[in-house]
Image (cartoon, rainbow, N blue to C red; front, side, top):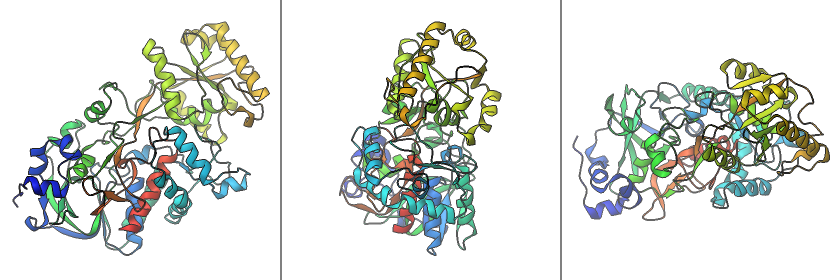
Length: 517
């Protein structure tokens, strides 16, 4: 097989010039474009899905349910990517569980919450699509075998005006990934290949996507840039897609090179919540065939992570649904609170970064008592204590000594916080009127977690429309045969995503991609 080097006119026609070429280099992009007439396909399917996370498996399951032959390609040795290590929290506006517990919600409230967190630069038509289809996506995952905690009130995540988040039974994204993957693989004509890395698209003479090039027996070695450019492991295969290709390759939060190019403030050694395979390569290949980029340099940090464990860990669960809800966070230098612990992620991460810029090792500390934790997450306390991200102290004096916090100021902060809860008025605007007077108890034990924002979600990616079609940067029309869903897309969340809306976004638009194709 011989690659065809296309002319500058053809490059413009097919979208290889513009945003894609600016990122990849003109000669490289033109040299790597493959045309169907020059390819002998090894296998043919109706639909090819790149990625096996929430978006990819939802797309594959919906397409397979329609009777299509589906091939899912996953470059890592296990399915799911970030979705597997996700906390399994699924924000569903105006869901039945809210109604059961008397929670008043609406699509309008959900969109306003998203716009506030996203600084108003969200693409509202995508949010409106989520509102219309989120409950459908929930029901579809249940049909495929996912199980959720339907006997408790929905969880209240930071930045949301009301509790609207439904959590999987096992409090992990694996509770959705496992049944979806099993659903897909049981259907006739559908396959899921692991350790198979997507390399590039195959296009026809009209610039439509008709297949992909991938490598089987690929071995990811964790060198990030090398894995997308220099890692040559595996054997090349050509797969034809009769209906089209769905790109659901996820974000690039673990890509130390690409994320730093977008935001030079991110240290190369900064720990991320992402799995190590969360790199930019597949997204860049979409830019190469003309996909419109949106919000690429908006990278979200998780304000609930801990420097005392690697990756995502258990701290986000214990802080989001525990210490941040009924406890508080303090600046160890002063012993004072410094933020609304239930604000949106960007607001909280910015507040923590302000402290860490002034004193790089003065990690803020989240503090609470046993009553701070929702009943369903109390079993995770032992995990936090075992891995060292959470510490337990009998008195506030011990807390102050352990973290070198001014003792009297810490006690004053706890008292002031509790007074605010009793009066229903919090100095930082935390919605304490809904806490039924529940704050930090007057005696221990006290549970503490040190905080550090970690790169978590990349807001930017490919521009899609309400049908999950990828929009061309050259024609402003859909690229024939190319669909995308999930974190590889951009615009939905604006500058910063609300917690638990990633699952909603991925599953909803994954499902829509599987329907639209």
